[in-house]
Image (cartoon, rainbow, N blue to C red; front, top):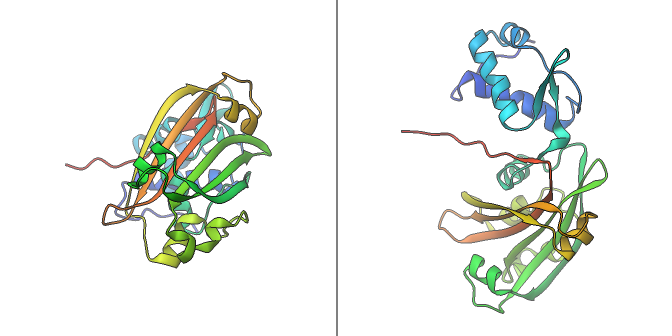
Amino acid sequence: MSPEIQRPDPPYMQVAKHIKAEIESGALEDGRKIDSVRLLAEKWKISHATATKVVGVLKAEGLVISEPGRGTIVTRDRATASAKDRVMRSLEGRIYATNERAQLVSADLVPAPEDVADALGLPSGTSVIRRQRVTLRDDVPSSASTSWYSGDLATSAPLLLETERLRQGTPKYVEEQTGLAPAAGKDQLRADIASEEDSAALGIPLGSPVLRKQNWVLASNGDVIEFGQSVSVARRWATYTYEISR
């Protein structure tokens, strides 16, 4: 059956999301060539200009590049999912791409460091849940992250203190256990150099360039459900897709 355009997303965004999903699932592997602009236009029954915009979106997100003589090539291994992507995948029943897996390093109750307490809106030193993980892509460490939660969730969501990976992902698990549904998020990024902790977790030299991130997952009432901190190795794209309305 031929793919069809649905509303309300603009046609070019629907096609781009479809191809992006194929890349993330592994159906389109790294190094594979995607359809040309002409084939995209024919397959999806869209204009040449719209098909060109599709390829432009995928390039902007670091998912494909154009290679002379080959066409447009998938570069999945150069991209890294944003915090928003992780949350949305979890709520949709998908967490990691087929070439990714996470190793839970620790899950425990600890006194909140000052910056974490501020981020969660808690007094410094309050007991909080800390979950530390390393994400591997093609069995090579690509990022290290820590998720922080209020210590109150230790009773209502006890599996947060287990080092077993949560099948449905932490956002979905917390929602199932507490009713706290993600409604908004905020991300911060900065260029940095690898600390000793980053070096040990990612297997990179001390002082290597890295991308450091912080993100908040917020409930509809503004309460912080999760505060995350992560660091990614160099030469990977962090992508954020958003809509602009007037």
